[in-house]
Image 1 (cartoon, helix red, strand yellow):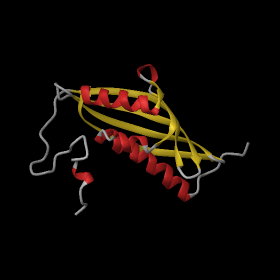
Image 2 (tube, rainbow, N blue to C red):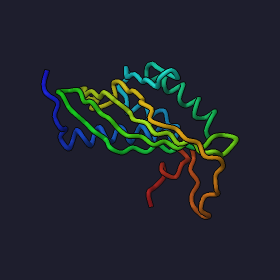
Image 3 (tube, one colour):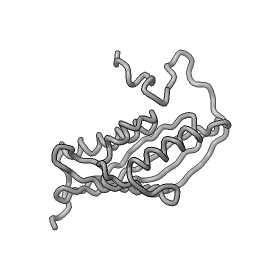
Length: 166
């Protein structure tokens, strides 16, 4: 087995782009975008809440998000990538904000994604196995109005981010 090494800039961009597609897909509840971050036989491990294949994960997570939250925002930082041949160990720090349906409280979740990415010809680098590692969670009651005159987010393809840029 080859030693782990730093990824090339191209590999780093492709893996980071998949991570960002996942987060955007979760926040916009866009199954196609989430799916594009995984290999078709990819696995997701969200602990006792869910463990399984990507299609079952999509069904579970989209229903959970629609039922429990009116808005989410997933942000990533500290992305570490170590490559060994056609496999990469990827760790991403996550802070996710969830507005709780009914109460307006904001649940803030600190965690890490510990992913195994693999490269496949014709597909590229995608998640083969994702494991969520929890760090902490807090909840704050109530929300304040958004700034007047700003576009409002939507959790589907009517969101302004799917339209023309300018």
